[in-house]
Amino acid sequence: MAAKFLCCLPLRLGVIVISFIQFLLCGGFAGLLWWALWYANENANDLATITQSMKTTVIIVASIYTAATLVGLLGFLGALLKKNGFVKTFYILLSVVLSLQVGSSIWYLVTFYRTRGQTLEDCLNGTTDTKRVAYCNSLDAYRRVPQGVMIASVIVPIILQAYAVYIVYQYSKRLENQKIESLRSSRAFIPPAGPAYQPVKPTDETYPLTQPTSHYPYADAPNSFGHTHNKSLGGHEASDKV
Image (spheres, rainbow, N blue to C red):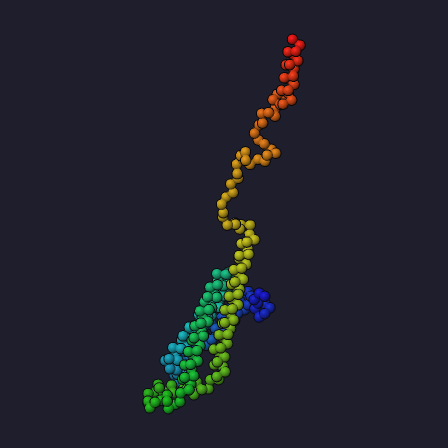
């Protein structure tokens, strides 16, 4: 059975829908991360202070989701225009983004829970630096983040991305098969070149025996057997009469 989008819908519609949803979700999540970084830089309080490692992680994740947003836009245009080149490029970039997205999401979760699991005493470690104290006081903000929301914000985009890779791959194969079938049925389709046919020239051996081409001299009336016999008999009769 041919692949379908959501079991019954055309693959082209699936690519359009998924690429558009990816564009919206990844764009929204990337925008949220970039806004969080801007807000952290503009507001130094216990809700926005983050470590340098966490800031680097957020920048990487936001960059990857921004790339995923642009890839989704490319796939949307490719599905609308039925361009297999766009769709195949969309599939390749989508696979790369999926791999990076999985790796960065794992790193993001590990960094988040490692930071979230620190106690105030372990975080301070006897320091009196004001920035460090402000950061350690912000650990309560990490603990107040619902774990279900955090995990869903990472897992759901990955699932959508993986399903998008599958649908785009199947649609790219279908476009390629349609192109091959169109070439086969087109009048401009030229069969593979081979040796040209050379007709055999007529010779004596090529004609059947029932239709000879050479002249048989004894088939003429003057040279026939019966005509010669009558002539010899006539000569004897003339000699007898003399």
